[in-house]
Amino acid sequence: MKRLLIPVMAPVMVAGVIALVIGGASAGAHTSRAHGAKAATISLKKVGDLGKVLVNGHGQTLYLFEKDKHGKSACYGQCAKFWPPAFTTGKPQAGPGVKASLLGTTKRKDGKLQVTYNGRPLYAFLMDKKPGQAKGEGTKFFGAEWYVMNAAGKKVDKD
Image (cartoon, rainbow, N blue to C red; front, top):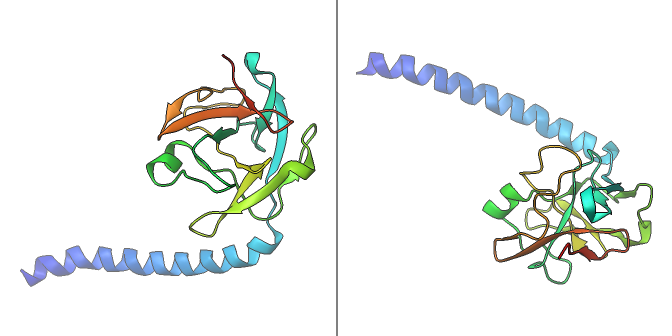
């Protein structure tokens, strides 16, 4: 029994040590990069018949969640897996057509900063696989509706 335990446990122990070493190295690297890391850039892009809407630095459409209140996110757990928050490492940057005065951040429960626009936290949608898609527009998931947002900071309701 002990012979079987040693070969089985050895790879697990080695993997654990490697994870600790990598985790420690990446934790240090993350700390040093946090100050020099690039902040999120929010821009406008024409998306189908919705007109020009907010997108992230990868051109992915951004959404607001009607359940969010007072500038705070109500999307955690499974919700945040399907609707990943738009994170930033500092003050978000306004791309062409975006009003810098409407950009801001809100602190999530885990301490990370989420980009806001006109006081509304912003999210991408897991089903938008490439830039220019807006498959989440007007849908209702996790207890409320999801909408894209225009440069004025208003939801775009295609109905």
